[in-house]
Image 1 (cartoon, rainbow, N blue to C red):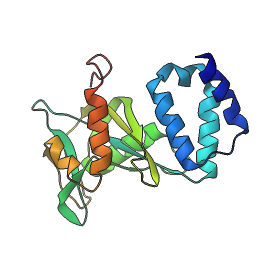
Image 2 (tube, helix red, strand yellow):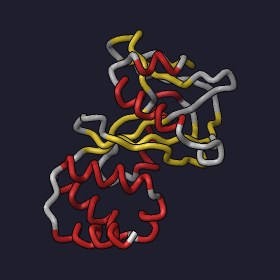
Image 3 (cartoon, rainbow, N blue to C red):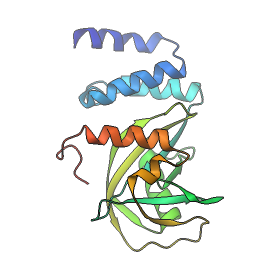
Length: 180
């Protein structure tokens, strides 16, 4: 832990490239208390991400009683499913983006949101995945199909690499760590 703190203190003076930032964020996610114990770390990384214009996005992972995942098809391909979500708007928090994106794409409301995963999956967006409790019925005016799908269908879609990493990460968590 001492070595980790020493390295973290040097972050404030370093110029990091986006790959460095991704590695650091992945490591910090393995030690959730580091975010709470050292808010300067998170602030430094956020500033580095903004400086490098690393874009942020969110997605929402929801399971039904049968173990299916809520999927949203691409607007131009009704057979290519991903998780509901999208870009985080300027000045918007990730939590606000989760609520907005889910409402826009599915008509559902979400409460008790919890971050369960984040990664770039070698794309230009740093994407965090959230879950929570939903209310309402599915209805939307956006193009695309919204339906409950098998998790494998998401791995086959255009965001398959990210979804595969997400599901692998969740399979390593205990039921207590992932209650939704």
